[in-house]
Structures are given as C-alpha cells and as structure tokens.
Amino acid sequence: MSIFSFIKNAGAKVLGIGKTEEEEAAEALAAKQKAEAMAANYMEQTVRDLQLEVENLSVCIVEDTATITGMAYDQATKEKVVLVVGNSKGIATVDDQMTVSYKEPEAQFYMVVSGDTLGKIAKKYYGNAMKYPIIFEANQPMLKSPDLIYPGQVLRVPNLDD
Image (cartoon, rainbow, N blue to C red; front, side, top):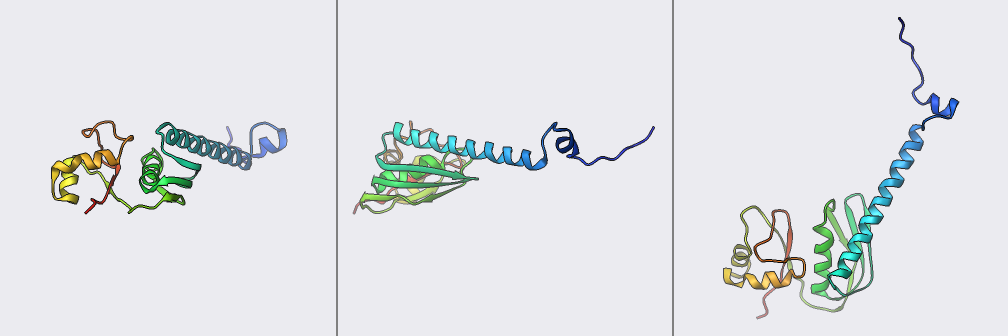
C-alpha cells in the first residue's frame, strides 16, 4: 500500500471536473452579494409596509453594515427607518445617509438589556415610569405591545417637549 500526493485542484484544471478554489471563491462571493441584495430589498419593502415615508429609499448591505439613503419625511421617520434596518438579523452597524424634509430634534437611542421594561426606561430618561407610552408611541409601528421588548433591541427615546 502506498500514499500518493496530488495537487489539490489539478482535477478541475486537467480533467475539467470540479471547481478550482478561485471558482469556488467567486461563486461564494456572488452568492453572498445576492443574499445581501435580497436582504436589502426585504428591508426596503418592510419600511414601505410600515408606511414610513422615505423618498428614494435605498438600503445597501455589505458584510454586517447597512447604508441607508433617501429623504425621510421627518426626523422621527428617519430614526424609525434606522431602527427597522438596525434591529434586523445580521446587521451590526447602520450608516445613516438619509436627509429629512422637516427638521426636528434628534431622539436618543437605547439598547434594551435583560430585565428592562418601557417603564424602567421611561424612569431612567424622564424620571417617571408612567411616561412609558411616549417611548411606546415613538417606536410604533415596530412595537406591537409595550410588553414585547427584548434584550439587544434598540429603541427611540424622544426628547420631551418643554
């Protein structure tokens, strides 16, 4: 019995069977880019389905970063679009390149931790847990219930008008 050594990709080159490492890498890259484009299209459709007004909305995903462009109706809409995209599976960073038609003060973003409730978050930001409906309303239509938040989710916390 003997052990023979071969060039790993020679079969693909010599006999025309199989694929070279370069061909496999190119196919993997093409599949990844197609998946990123499909995810971006899905996010754009989700924003439209939520009736968030953004002209010329475009989401582009590369790796775990989403870049968003377009003109949002107002600051709240812009922030909600960022949250829809950023709270999506596989997205770690959002590059917000959107503009707004009607300027408003920016809200703060808060990442939910285990044990949080909207009341606890309201107490932290507003000094009054009973102001949780403000946070709930600021995150609609993404939130369906004030009781359904989860660790890692990012929420809008708007400034209170004085």
